[in-house]
Image: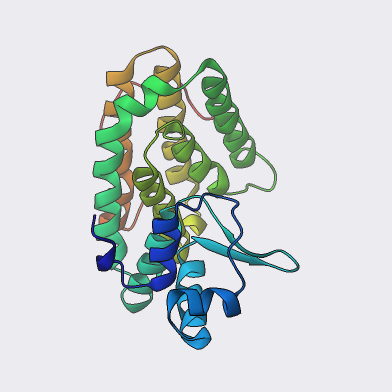
Length: 240
């Protein structure tokens, strides 16, 4: 790639000089003349680098280069889009669904026995919240379960996009949905997906994932609890 296309002197310097995660950059007053720009302009470029998660600034330590993470850039862009029009989340949600479907087999193949145990633990915690008194929405577990399935992928762009989805999910208020029947239906699917994954039934797990993603669409369209697409359940919720 031509570094000239990277219209930020600081980012270009970091990429060109081969800086790695944890490397310390020169102070601004030393780096600015080396780059041939003013300290003021360098400060502006530093803010961009910080927003992208490329650089962090720590007291008494200075500027440190961070490992690449796609999330900060896409998160900022997504939250801005949702601030202007919350309905944009539907388009991003469709993108996220296609990414999950496309990478599901590869992601599941990389999971270990410990990962399977962790997935079962997440499901168990979610049911404890749903069947507790008072009932609590397992929004953290919902995010954790999906991201855990794809956690072994060696693709920062896929993982960043999937993580950004959950930032948008919270931003538009979907994590506070309180219809108990709907939440139980969601977690029945989650439990069945995890069971299929642990059993090596990847195709079954992927089909359940696809069915599960239709729940939100049906809920929004009907304004009420969506009906199951007619699968055979492996488990039932414990009545609250």
